[in-house]
View 1 (cartoon, rainbow, N blue to C red):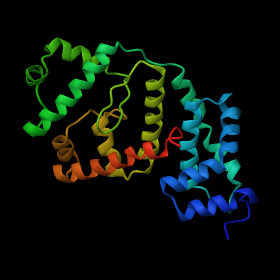
View 2: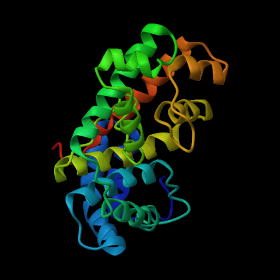
View 3: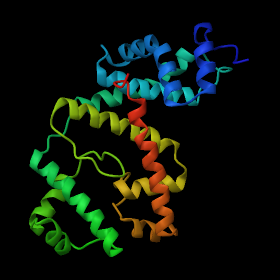
View 4: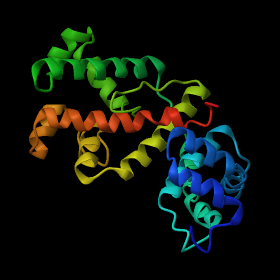
Length: 242
């Protein structure tokens, strides 16, 4: 018995999804709820577009996980979830423009910083980074300043692009990261904060995170791998794949 308030047309797909919460099961319930998703987007932010629909589908999956059929109708519950689309839409319509050469230079800098940190067992100095990357220390400083406002693409950083397609993809990933973050336990949230510099936390390497949180570097690496696996599921749930 699913509950008194679940709409009749959604009982079968909801029951199937509860029994099979895999990428395939997610795709099936999203297909069944597509009219609700489109109405939700239109109600909260206007005519649907591919990017808003993608974010709405992710909010739908998040809403399904905490839906209680004994308390409300499914459509009502999901429409409350779609309130978040207003903030997402505002963020998408106010992009931050960073010169492309700075974006890709910053990406390379982050990659080399992590490589050196792994080799040295500590965060590298700017001089060591300059030797490794070929950038001057002034260039490194400028790239760090330009990094403010650039979105991260995962625990392994992704360089944002300028094209509308890449901007949409980046926004999708940002939304997915928020959903993953909300589902983490306190320790994993701290690890994600320190890895990506979220919520006012400084960006730290594995060794520094381990020292701050009183864990071994190996334990931090294992937890980061699990978090990354959750982040990678965004590909399976993308509405643009089938």
